[in-house]
Image (tube, one colour):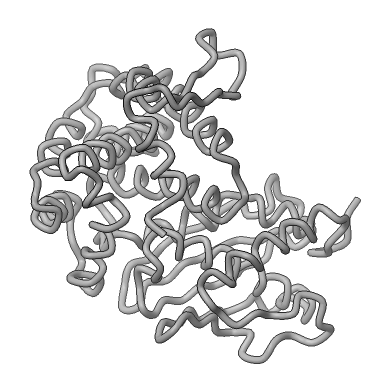
Length: 333
């Protein structure tokens, strides 16, 4: 049994130490975790000229707000590993409080607007270590990487957020390289197994997820799309352009726009100077099953259990695209 939002053991201090090293990389001001009082400006997180404004549940104690603030700094720092900036110069985060829930952060949602708004539900009875390890906040903040209008072709947006939630956790030190690819391999396997609506195109399944309840197919078809596009982009440009870099250019030109998935794919091609995203978009949205993923992982040097009994993977540097696998894990920084 753990204290409410407490640091129950030394493992939490190890996590915090790794986070401090990441913050030094970006030369950001440090916040003393063990301070009795909340840090100055606890309702704002800053990176250079960028700002995140935080609104806490009124039921949260001073200590809970302080530790929630440190947690949000860790998550927002992880987002910086994509291209060194947040995808929105200003956005809001609201923390709602729950208890007796099945996970530390059981639910989140992004509402598009001016500014964008991220809602996170936090179980205040979870330990700090469990909160830091939860994927929900990383997923929701990753949604901000594209100026998506919030509806239509949700597989596109959900796929990007699911792809990057794992990548930024790994780059922030919360997952090993094998851990990153193990999670991606396991998720892709779940997506491929969910094929009970193989007579219906992905765009229809995606736009009516509650009706068809094919959440794995929707999310992981999207991950397959973005992973495939990331690899092709690196190959065609000889690593001069990566998904990280083209998303940075998308931020610079379009962060204040409200774009459809199709228009984002077209703009990404224009920014990258290649034809990848639009062609793949047209192909995936009419797919009737998630494309096979095993050849992609094999070429990346990710060796999975052929019988699917375990999510553990082995990595080899002898594969054709092993250098791309390492580059995706490390990031451009």
